[in-house]
Length: 118
Image 1 (cartoon, helix red, strand yellow):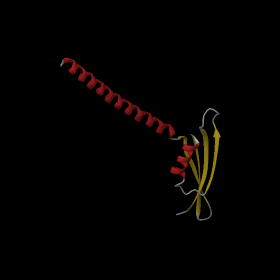
Image 2 (image 1 turned 90 degrees about the vertical axis):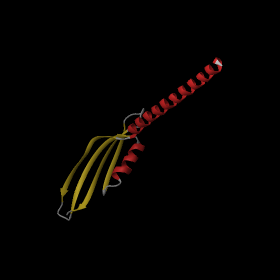
Image 3 (image 1 turned 135 degrees about the horizontal axis):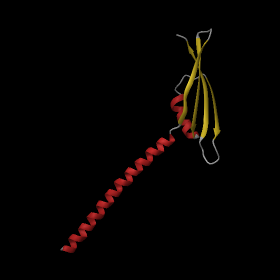
Image 4 (image 1 turned 30 degrees about the vertical axis):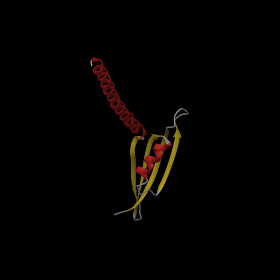
C-alpha cells in the first residue's frame, strides 16, 4: 500500500512539475513575442519636420521629412500604416544599407501635400 501511494505521489509530482514548466514556457514565449514585435517596429529617429508654404493660388504646400531605421519589411508596414493614409501628392524615398551584416536600412522620406486653403 505504501509503495502504491509513493508511486502515485511521484506521478502527481511529475505532473505538477510538467504543468509548471508548461506555464513557464508559455510565459517565456509571450515575452519573446513581445520583444519581436517591439524589434519589428521601426524606430523613428527624428520626428517628422514640416514646413507650410503659402502660395498665390488657392493651395498651400506642405513639405515633410522623416528619417527612420528599419528592414524593408518594417518600412513597408510603416509606409502602409502611416504614410499611405495621408494625402501625399509627391514623395521621394531613399534607403541606405547600414552594413553587410544587417538588413536594417536608413530610410529618408520627403513628401509634399498640396491642400486647398480654407
